[in-house]
Length: 259
Image (cartoon, rainbow, N blue to C red):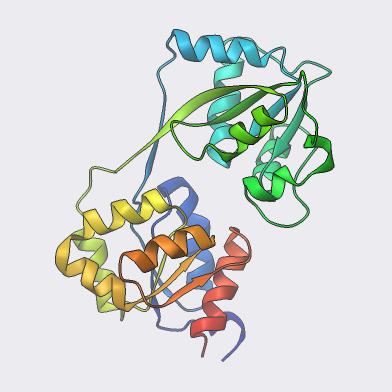
């Protein structure tokens, strides 16, 4: 079956943060899937303490702002506005993906650099504009923790890099049993996981019995790195969407499970 009912009756567990899950769940439901939201990561703003204030003020004179996610856009711009810090005319903006660029456009900001292909640090770092960063100041606006590849590579190329950590990811304090039960009642066909941390939290929240059911399902994710982590946890059926957008995730599910 193709079209709107290509996923008819298939239970899909969506583990994105609550604010980002609604559109994907709606898209899945429109194609007939039984979509079940189980947020495995909650996003909280970090306290506006002196180290963060200092990093935000340093961003005022940076040559580049790097937003690593939609959450970085939402929380980063909110903090900058709170302190009355605007974008200097010479400051350019780079992002790792088109979804983040779209989030900035909603705030009236134009992105100067986004990878043509790929949606990660590796793809961004291939840009010719970043080959020689001698004397450049870069503010990476992100959550607490995360990968070091972008910062370490830019520093090796001569840049001064500051982290502006405006949010943190935490495991939600919720009972996963109800969502897991709905998903299993719908056939436990697939699970969507978009971060390694979210995968860790999912297995913790699901418990031993739920984790066993998860390992039997198709896991759809957005990077080879997450798929490798899932394989290490015993998942045997993993598919990587070509991009992290809702449309690409849904098409990957249709390709793998569509009727």
